[in-house]
Length: 555
Image (cartoon, rainbow, N blue to C red; front, side):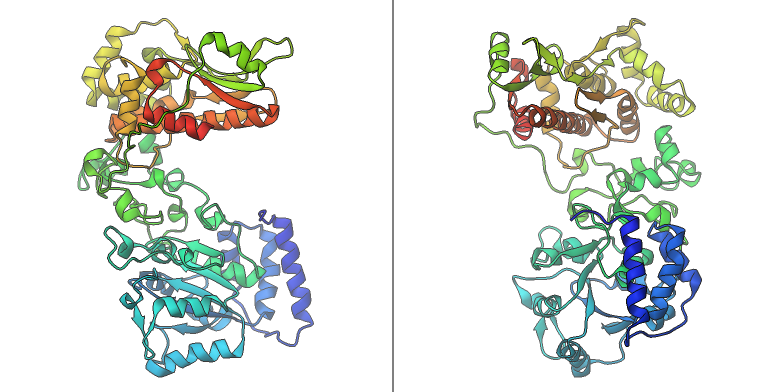
């Protein structure tokens, strides 16, 4: 489903107002305009939505909400209770009718169960908000209430009647801590057992703002917010947390806290080296914060734990260290395969293959994306060139204040490697379009030696025990005539990550994954544009199981 534009959302509000003005079910009530303004701002909607939203909330009946507790700790409810715009009293008396919430409701036992049965029998519309994961296999792990029903059974009967379903928190979105290895209760996120579309609002807990604003969006528009590929609202989870962090400039400058109680940490240094997972996390914590916008973990002096990401308990390793192999809990490294991979064309075959209506991704001395031109000669669709002289690259990085600080940190922490660079590179430019030279740059920085062959780098990439890619700022732009692959801004990133405690395996893995991801996009674009199949040309040293796995994706 395509995203709704602001114009379309505005039409929905205007239509609702017209319907409510002539409806017998309208409930005239006073609504705090400051709360409406705060919600519209939070949802990143234009200011001219404010009077329309105000009128809808003044006229619309309060929407019924069932808040279901499954396998969880009630932390998401604790976050909800701290809402300020609207505050909890406003929310409960002016915005929603909370039909069921085990922590807040006065009823208990049979009376509590009766309230659910009564709501279902009434056929009233309601939103279902679920806090906690579900145990759909060994359902006895979560037996609730006077009727002794399992959480799975209660979830199913409510989900079947709900107008919309929100998974509030990481437990209901992905399973959470009880789904961590070895997961004896076989708990999972609710989307794995329901047929309906689930709006995921992950976080451990999510902020009160993310909870309330998502419910409010449905109240206003009677539709779900625009969602990403994981069904998370884009307004809240559409950006990398790291890019909004107040300590990002220190990250770029290579200024890292070495431990939690040092002066660097207290003065705002980046917390990546003590385990912050911000570069791998998508959430708006730095913007909305927690506890009435009081603070958020990084502001309070502790790194992000990636708590809004799936399986964060298992997949991000020890939470006070960067993701290096020694700190992994689960080994996700690439398993070598003996299966026959893709064969490489030799130079004599290239022209005949191009004539045979195929495009070729070539990894010879240059990285090229070849197709047959109008004059029957091979044309290169890929525009890819960079400076491979490490000394000149570092000098270019140091031209601005942040880069100069970063290079000084690297020189201090990797003095021997820097001495190798000074001794083995002169001031002569060495432009290259060979991905081997791109990978060699990282190897020289990390090991202080030249990269002997591609197999060495692929071995390092394949041995990385995590599956999360460290961003490298590689840019690809596509049009009808070319694919431009720009790596010029990526050269600072290995310096940053090395200074922040990552090791060569992480950098090799990320460089390979991101380079092949971009080549995949370029290759797909050209293949579809020309309606041609794909072939490959690569040296023998590239014929590695990890490389073959990347080609499988490309194909």
